[in-house]
Image (cartoon, rainbow over all chains, first blue to last red; front, top):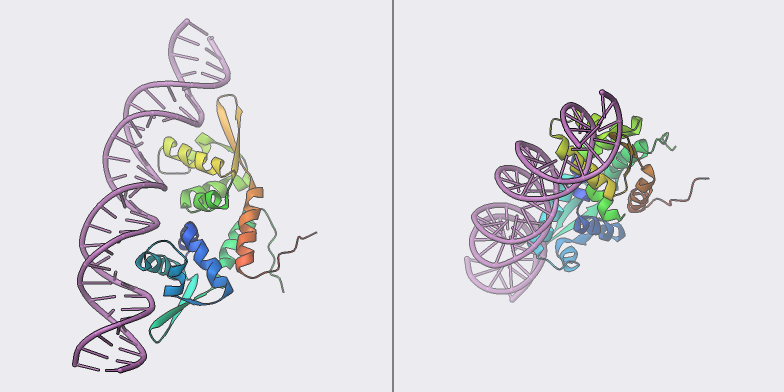
Length: 93
Length: 93
DNA sequence: TAGATATTTAACCAAAAAGTTAAATGTTGT
DNA sequence: ACAACATTTAACTTTTTGGTTAAATATCTA
């Protein structure tokens, strides 16, 4: 929820990679885990950190839990960074 | 230099705070350290991490070393995030 | 209900991060 | 050259992070 959580979540390369994967389409935990050289448990932990930061949402479908990107949270970071850059960030209508 | 370094540097709240301070104006290491509850050495380490990420630049002026924000690096992150959001990030002329 | 599969949670471990104090370095002014 | 000051670097400690394997939980199907 907080900028802190979001930034922390984005600090890890594996988690950024997960977000990039999810940009294309929603994937189950297992499908995501396949992309990485470490255990499903490790990936599961990454997923829970991303979920706490509200960067992803999960929905169970039977045996599988599908994850999808929640890009809306990125707005806050975008603003923080834009602000640092001294941009005048008006709302784009 | 890498996105990884930049993201990692931004992952720490103290370092983000430093950048925010430097947004206003350049400050010496000592002035920056005054804003934090921990030692000057700890702040110095944060500064070196930010410097490695090229997020700040330093220039010595006599006894003092002044730090200034280098916002240009933020462009890369901004693009990464915009991309995740699915934005069509054209250059703004 | 039992067994197979998907995923998470728990307990644990090693490596990295972030802090400390003390010593080293660079600069100024006398 | 020396003392005072600003800052960094070194050595060390504690906490956090990111991984492991094994056990727990949830769902499906025979």
